[in-house]
Image (cartoon, one colour):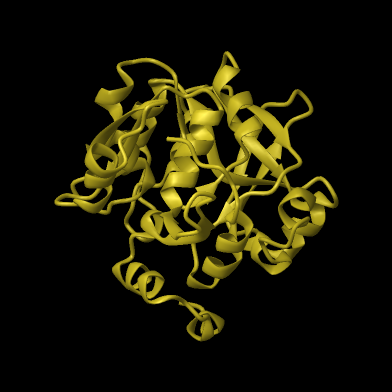
Length: 267
């Protein structure tokens, strides 16, 4: 937890969700029903799923931990979606994002698929562009787009991965947590990865073969890099001058909640 995060004022429900570590189920925007003026709170994942529905996705797989019930119960009982089907895959242990993706291999049935973070809210038009492309692809978000509305502070850009994209529009390298000199070398051309990809079944081999990170985990960015360098995968990058809402820190909760206030949700 960042020092500044400790001073963030949260509701009782938000504090409980933060302590439980289930970011996707963080209760956020407070809405008023036109009929009754009753105030309602939705989990963050409702907004992310609704954006995927807006983008035209019809089958969604949520990767959960063993024994997880809150997410399963919401989307299979309390709030059953009508615009898309929801499936669940279980990651047996928290062994990294590439390992999590392996849990969903059966769900993909050998077909191309899109993978996104559950603690990010992506613009539906960006997701739609990714869905309709015809080759492996990723989204490179411009630094200016991410900073424009102030959802992400400028000093946080270095905490994300930046993308080295060739003149042909294809990804050459993912640079994790770049130092200031690397950021300076890109000038105004910085494109940031928010872990938003359209991939093919070939990535599962990379997820299995990629070496563990220094933390001992199998990481999806490293698997993507492995797929490029070892397997010869070509990944076209889609440029997006747009904002992404990131709920990765406790201090993000009030800002993200305010940004999502009034956003229509349809599951």
